Image (cartoon, rainbow, N blue to C red; front, side, top):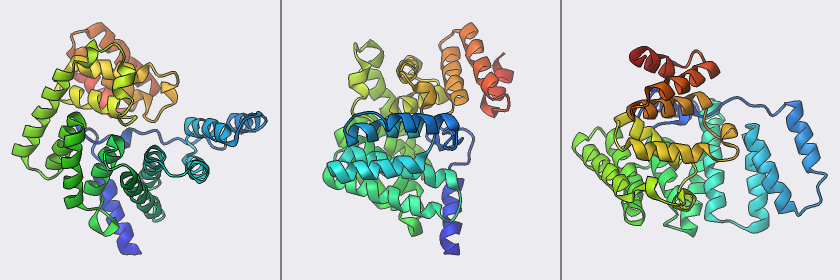
Length: 304
């Protein structure tokens, strides 16, 4: 068992760098409020409603996510699967939640969550081999996780090739990620350029309804677009449109990622787009939330 934990620590180390065009697990909120009185009161209030069990479960999932009670989210998703049966969307959510817990716990028991993540993604693709969000997540997991813990680089490449046929934008990005981690600069640059060319051709800022565009993509795909465009300073308008879409969600402040990182990304994109004054306002919002956030500190010192 100690050997498994050693390899798990190697897996965690893959996400230790402060900024990368592809990794964002280290910017996920970690604070748990599951003992908070308000949380308990809201759960108790919810259980007094006259509604179907599924309706209550769905509301509880939103509530548990809001308060970062991810273990409860997993229990609720499993109960929903018991009632409705397995579906690619539910299994994708289940796999993703297990993956976040595996990363955040950083202890021996995290291996259990890691195994559940891989199993859920695999089941989702058995039901729908072309389910884009699951393909995207499973590729990243299989390529990043050590082989002894279930990783499989060859399978990840095959899935990335399939994703490239189903949805070129995500496919190019996944292939770029693989070659980036494999340190194959020639192929990495090829697929990275393919991604930016595809993003440009889609003209997402000119679309009337971005909700439709993002509806069949992973929940964090707008963040991925804003992250990689801000990192390379290319297709900045598309990055801003994607990030604005993410931030317009009714509960975006309660979503997955830390607000200081979101404001940092928007400040950087706004600066690249030539709006210095708004960029200063946004970077100050980031630093107000977390004065020790190194990315915002560095960006502020370098540019202002």
